[in-house]
Length: 142
Image: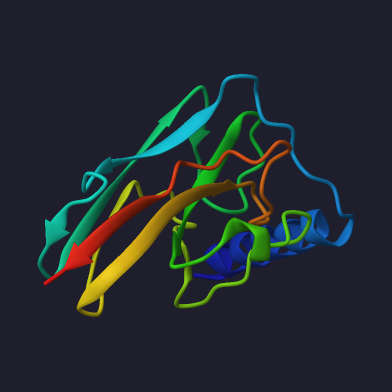
């Protein structure tokens, strides 16, 4: 148990250092992230499963310092212009973190129309330079 706590503390410390120095990890040329499902314009019911896709990079948990990797963040009803790409992404109901390296999520969304977009973050949840961000899709939850 002590080894786990020490490792966890080191990961938190490293992630904090990445955020503090303002450095953004370089994204490889041609890297793309996209939503596999649901399809743009789909009408879905709860719970909604969103499957993430990534090309040109690998997925690694937050705190993992490996070149050309990152982890997913799902932007729900969020305009990317409102996201500070130079800082660690906040964890909110509209910016959902997948720091464990998850590549899909099943969650409840309120009935209505929603926009969804993926944004890859580095080990400290900071978007890459340039940002690796999907096209926005719209889904309607019945």
